[in-house]
Amino acid sequence: MRIHSHGDPSVIRAEDVPRPAPGPGEVLIRVAATSFNPSDAGLRAGLLRSVFAIDLPWTLGGEVAGTVVSTGAGVSAFAAGDAVIGRVDTGGTAAEYVTAAASTLVAAPTTVPLAHAAAVPIAGLTAWQAVFDHARLTPGRRVLVNGAGGGVGGFAVQLARHAGAHVIATAGPRSAATVRRLGADELIDYTTTPLALTEPVDAVLNLVATGSSAATLLPLIRPGGVLVSATVPFETPPGSPVPAVHFVARNDTAQLAALVKLIDAGTVQLDISATRPLTDLPAVHRDAEAGRTRGKIVLVP
Ligand SMILES: NC(=O)c1ccc[n+]([C@@H]2O[C@H](COP(=O)([O-])OP(=O)(O)OC[C@H]3O[C@@H](n4cnc5c(N)ncnc54)[C@H](OP(=O)(O)O)[C@@H]3O)[C@@H](O)[C@H]2O)c1
Image 1 (cartoon, rainbow, N blue to C red):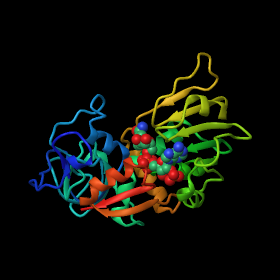
Image 2 (cartoon, rainbow, N blue to C red; image 1 turned 90 degrees about the vertical axis):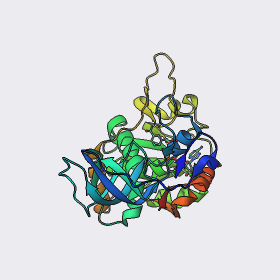
Image 3 (tube, protein in one colour; image 1 turned 180 degrees about the vertical axis):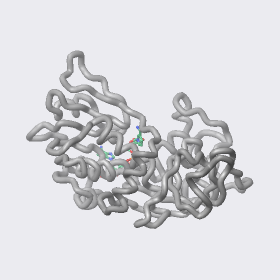
Image 4 (cartoon, helix red, strand yellow; image 1 turned 135 degrees about the vertical axis):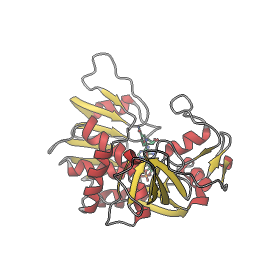
């Protein structure tokens, strides 16, 4: 599924291109699935040009679950037939085959369907880094996950619980039951209830791009706590007792492998809201941009 120009979802086209060949250090993967992330829409629309330059035409897709078909020179970590997952920052996973650097991949979880595992790398690593690297949640901490119904939110709620934190989550009616099942201790329905807490939290993980402001979120956090945002950066007033951290997640195979272990242990579940054919990608972009999607959407070639 490729774009030849930036624009609305109609620029995404299904095209036949030659199967890529793995270069040194790379593997060729038969794609079981990729999954949608909001950044795919930003990339397609041309909104990320200043941070992530791409050459057109560009094959979409930034993460993969699949089976290794062949390996390039110097690859010893994987062999043909291995089931792998990974974040592929060079794109191209919205396809039947993709090449990726072996160093970016890990063994797929064995307890979930391989296609479902495509939901893990980007959302899972983002949640992992929010919970462990930036909020540094530990047992007994209180955290508010703002936007728990989304792809990142589902992982964030579970990882925060795994860290031993008390989890308060914002979710609308369509996601409330799932977010509760994934481990949220308290829910706030953001569609009906203003964001207010009786007791402050140690950290807010902000996963919502619009509608939140530093003025709304900072008063929810105790002095010495932290506001962690994976979406918009927040300005804090001079002398604010709560720092605001904005981060862009990075690929980290040690963290991804640790997450796979938690999935196989049954500690972390996947919140897959839909599995769709890859050729539905333009419709998925439209649905996501209209706010009609929740959880993770997996796309199967
Ligand atoms: N910094 C990074 O490296 C990085 C990496 C990945 C993602 N992101 C960003 O993080 C954000 C979340 O990503 P995602 O994949 O989780 O997105 P997503 O799956 O598209 O998020 C959709 C969810 O957002 C929830 N939502 C919408 N408005 C809300 C509000 N006002 N309050 C609470 N929840 C609200 C909806 O919840 P309900 O279903 O409950 O209505 C919906 O389920 C996106 O902006 C994405 O671009 C950043």
